[in-house]
Image (cartoon, rainbow, N blue to C red; front, side):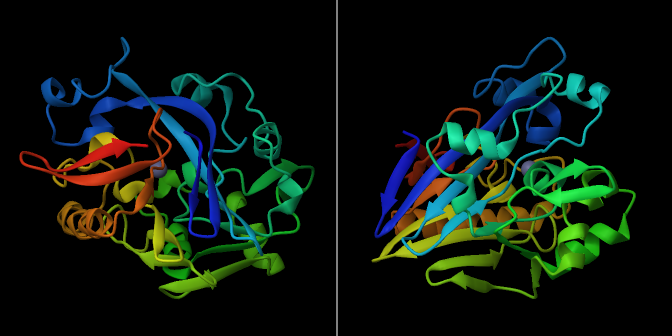
Length: 281
Ligand SMILES: [Zn+2]
């Protein structure tokens, strides 16, 4: 199922493409004997992962959550991810899903790693131009500041052309913390993957859609201790996953995942062994 109704809101998955990334990096300290029961690795130990974006149509606004990987990687990097030499531009993918990319008036980035905001802009002569010219863009100020620190641990995750031109032109708003972007649509800090990553919720008529971003990147990661090797704060990640997945289970939320290669939406239930389980819609 690629689209759901949540109260008055319509939510749709836009899976920009599938890439392949190291399975060990995705599952951290979890032994391969366990994670390989959830997903199959290729001969280079890579597993398939989606660049998943979600479109939230509220009736008044059309909001794009995340913009995928974009077009700024060289041939070697694309080959490493098993991506074709060129990606379809994200607006074309959106149009192919039956939506007018011009209707997007808000873009939200959960954080600024290239795989979440790479499609914000398109490279052109003399710099980068917005891929969604009509939209106001939103990201967390702390994350933008962190991106510019270029720490040795995660500096490689940031490409300034994905956000700096938008910040400079005033098209991107950097929010200081939890923010209601439009009525019912929230960015809320959910640290763990990094310090200022935001989870996105869309709440209407008592129903909630939640995009966990990299706090719970795929349905295979709902077990709280299954955190990625990328996560800067694994203990905080476990704590916040437990909190957010607990809320999702208690509130019967419909959930979306940044990198699941198959599932578009799932509910969260209790599980006697793994604490939580994902039930795809
Ligand atoms: Zn990611």
